[in-house]
Image (cartoon, rainbow, N blue to C red; front, side, top):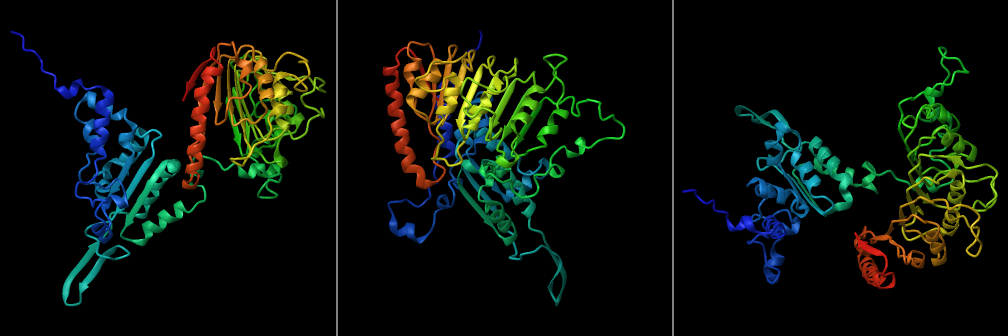
Length: 500
């Protein structure tokens, strides 16, 4: 007789319910914690969870759930909220000494996704002797022929290592508690956290690029620039010999870093042999006005990138152009042909972006992204000249003077773009092949240009507040956003809507 296998009831639970049970088990408040409705006792001492939500004697580490079986592991790993409490103690350091410094921290950060983090670092040693320095061979007493050795297990290097892992995610940290015995590790933590913008580890500071003068002054000359050694003449090569200095270069990102623009084509590989050769991606972003490429220099660079697939220009490019009205039909030079260009991202800061757009033939572009790169979060620059340049019209009332700039664009992303509804409508009318429109941190204007068209509309709400003082205004704005989005389906019933 064949024995029937019995399946426990917990194994038949839906994944969503099992995930929620895991969260309750991992984030259970301490039963012995002081209750909020007992003010007399609450004032007498501070509960552990008031120091950090990570401190709870009744919670279960998520690694325990992930170790039960294959199904539980898949559910636990797929629940980001389960891994949002990062707790490091002396015991963790000593236990994982042979496996590197705290691999658990990297694991929790990776599995937590984008959830807010609660971080608790307890660098206290129960056997600490109240000394500020390690004691090796110390004399216990003049009358006792013995020496005393003590080395604190938590070093300054440990704090450096932990914060190097945490600082790239500083914007996600909801609470941070650091407890140390000695001053040196705490001083290290304070120094690392004293930067105005700790996210410098992974995000460059674009603020200097909005200043017209390069800083530090005097160091924008060619002698200080990247690749300057490659540009120096070699006695082994002829001056007339044209040979790319970086023949295998496929991707070049110059963000906040400028080069000798006139010599840059010497670096780039030739794309004349085949479409598979040459540079594939180029990004120029965040350059001060003093060090941006001129129109001739940018043309020379793009002409050597005929096989370019993706181009990003953000707060860069020439400040002046030959034509006084960059969106007029008259141009001094023909646009640079980029037949393989499929992705174009523009971060506009002034009208020079519209002028630069007239320099490029974007007829094969399939994805377009336009964002407001104004330095102030609440500030903006009127994008109407740029939208009109994309539509090839000189004014809202004038007829189109040529083929639209993006006749084959299928996906378009707009982020914080500020313009009139009429300008947006003209822009949408100039996108005959559009299939998907993503609107980020802004309202949809000019939607009449999308009516009766099968376009997927994807809305990304405003960013969460970066400080508690912004929380109330952000919640009000998000509520208005949700009301606006709910009404869009009734206004543009023939379009498809999606909120992410």
